[in-house]
Length: 199
Image (cartoon, rainbow, N blue to C red):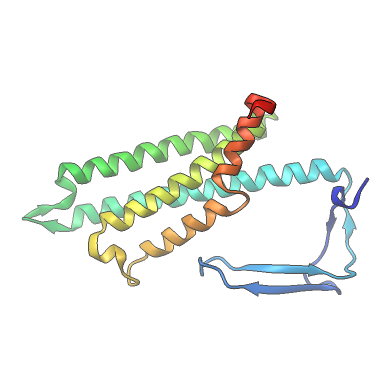
C-alpha cells in the first residue's frame, strides 16, 4: 500500500499540526490550511473505501447545502415581491417577475430531486451512487449560483448593496461551485462513467 492510499485520524491540537486560517471570498465560512509535520494519528483500515465514503458524504453535504441556499434565495425573493410596491401594486404581480420566480422554482425542484436521488442511492448502496453524487453536486451548486444571481437582480437596487444579505448568498454559492471539484469536473466524471474512454 502506497502513502497515497493510507489515511489517519489526527487531532487538530496534536503536536506537529499547524492550522493557518485563510482569507476567503465567503467570510461566513472559515477555511484553513493544515500542515502535518511529524504528527501522530490513528491509522484507518481500508483507506480507499474510507476515502470513497468520505467523498460521497461530502458531495451530498455540499449539494444539500446548495439546495437549501437556493431555496432560501427563492423564499426571500418571493417575500420581497409581495412587499415591494411599484406603480401601485406589488412587483410580484408583474408577469415578467413571476416568470423569473417560476424559473427559480423549477431549477430548485430539479436540484432537490438530484440531491434526494444521491442520498437514497448512497444509503441503499446502489450501483448508481457514484453517478448520483456527481450529478447532485454539480446541479445543486449551479442552481444555487443561478438563484443567488437572480435574487440580486430581482431585489433591484437594494439587492446590489452591502446592507442586504443577497451578496452573502452569492458568495456562498460561488464558493460551493468550486468546493470539492467544479461542476465541469463532476460532469466529466459522469461522462466517463457513461462513455468510458470515448469521453
